[in-house]
Length: 371
Ligand code: ADP
Image (cartoon, rainbow, N blue to C red; front, side, top):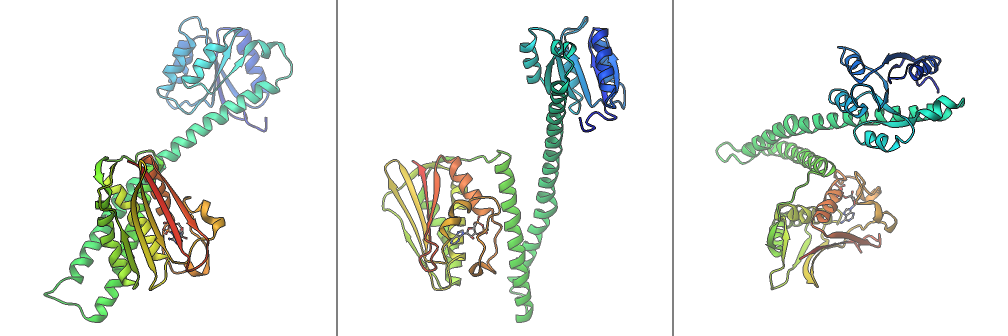
């Protein structure tokens, strides 16, 4: 038992004195502090005592006053910390399984317990139940930490960062009081750092939403060429800054899909900015959109540094960044492609990547979404 029961508070709720005494003797031997209740109401009154917390409750389903299931439901209303193990009589397995659905952590057949003298299975059952409950408690705590962290990032980080970016923008573009070249140079660096931090924050918040299953699409029929044109506007500025050529190949006819325009733009922004980031100065980037059968296909291709083929399956994973000399100095969060993949998946589509990992031969991302 590895001290599992040492100093643990245990409550047995069973109408049979024999069973209660038997359990008390057995569990006390392993250091547990055992209390007894002979009925459902007595059990609940013990459970409701202020400041009292039991680690383990052994609960009979057939009680003289109220049904064991009712006891379980009532205790779970205010206690999700105690592990509850149902003690079943013969033929009671069905109701024990129902109890597990209502918040019990396991069940043990009484018959086998009282008859046998090998209690390994019994203790194993208790251990499993206590671990099950510990897992639920830990998950709840983690969820609450995550929620606090999310709120902290949104309010305590993103809001002031927005103010910083706005202030910098005002100072940098103030025509009445122009900055000296030196001041401008420094503030441009500060601005770059602030923008980078903001991207990180937004990526994290998007990821947290996806992780919690809260990514909601605002879908309606849109011409995907419009999304492409929108995204190209920003990409063109980024590409020009690196003397890269951005080729845009769109069809003459509209490509209409039921999609979320903002999220689709986010996907293209991400793929295009990666293509620009991981392609040296003077390189070339292609954005293509075409219709194939009942699908719209986007391709974002570059002739940049490429991705080693053995790493291709991992680049959509969380925080994954391809290690290597040629990537030093290129900043990113490693969340971008994960978000891309999830957004495309929510649209019922998929995204693939192709690269030979040869610098100059580049990388090609192909995204398909149903029309
Ligand atoms: P990051 O924020 O690091 O760019 P992403 O999730 O967008 O994160 O991309 C994951 C990794 O995939 C990048 O760090 C980079 O190593 C690699 N990658 C993505 N796009 C390209 C590309 N077009 N060419 C080469 N490598 C790429």
